[in-house]
Image (cartoon, rainbow, N blue to C red; front, side, top):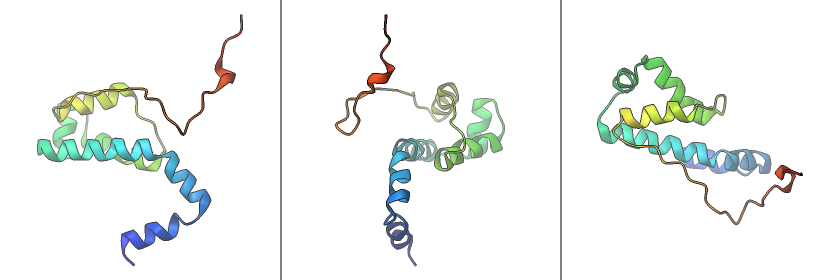
Length: 108
């Protein structure tokens, strides 16, 4: 079975599809991180050295984004970005799919 066939089969389950869609931001960040590392021509060990850490930490960082088991801090992602010759930019953008949560409003 090809990867695309397996993915289509697994994502035909509505609960799995919802969970997958809930992680789209993490998947996109990981794609960007891996692309930047490849473009820089660096191994995980080289990125780790530039970050001042060890290779297993970079492995955990990259795998954490797909497993959802850990949310790395912005500071860690920023160090990774700098190590691969990039800068981290974080933006909030309007979305048609997300409605504001009124329960977060403060009352006087």
